[in-house]
Length: 183
Image (cartoon, rainbow, N blue to C red; front, side, top):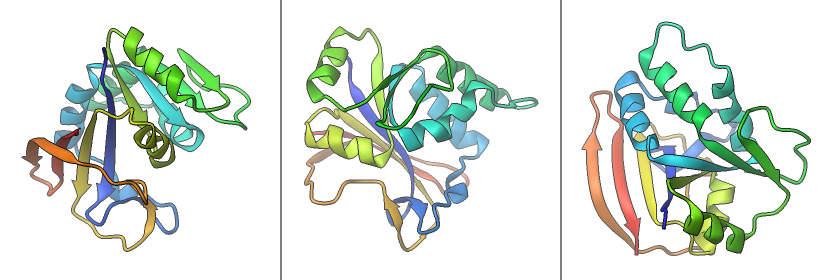
């Protein structure tokens, strides 16, 4: 059975976007991005909410000229399947993408059971539903060296999780990676 992972770039105080919706402070440098690329090599399917998909669809036609790291990520993203959960999205903006109107935990369980590669859930709202359904197996937190004071939380409110630290890494620019298994 494949694993479902939640990978997130967040501020030190746990936000993926500040109160104005800004997240440019989380842009990874090449060192962090290369590490993320290596993690993403095992992902065959991305599960996204509409907002996260709209951000990530950039990679379908990203200008990666001059950056091997960005070109590598674009190839990884383009080669994976994408499932977008949205009641309002009319059409997909990328290949290998399908739209589902509702998040069905049983369907995701079946997807995990049948998958030959890992799955990744992107976006805090969809991740909250996946956490609540007991679907998330592991988390990768990339904590940026910034405190934004408020905004969109990386982790769901009102849910308690027991975690086991599997790995950690510090990067030159101050970002820290923490890899946890959900107990």
